[in-house]
Length: 70
Image: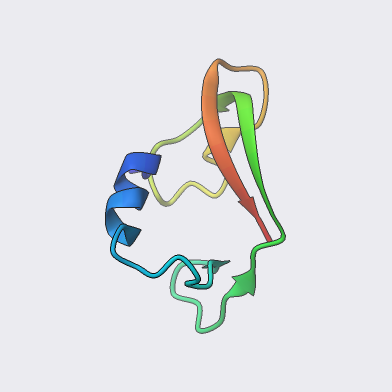
């Protein structure tokens, strides 16, 4: 299932604020630096299951999502 911002914040609440944030594909041995964090106000969920590679359409909807670009 997709993770909410609440779930994410619970996982990182005790980390030091200077902890590096990166992104990686599932089962990857390396991660990439975050290039940009974008808040999209009109996204639409396509698939809430993890295996979907395109789970959210970044437009044509009514959901707010946080997009981490690398």
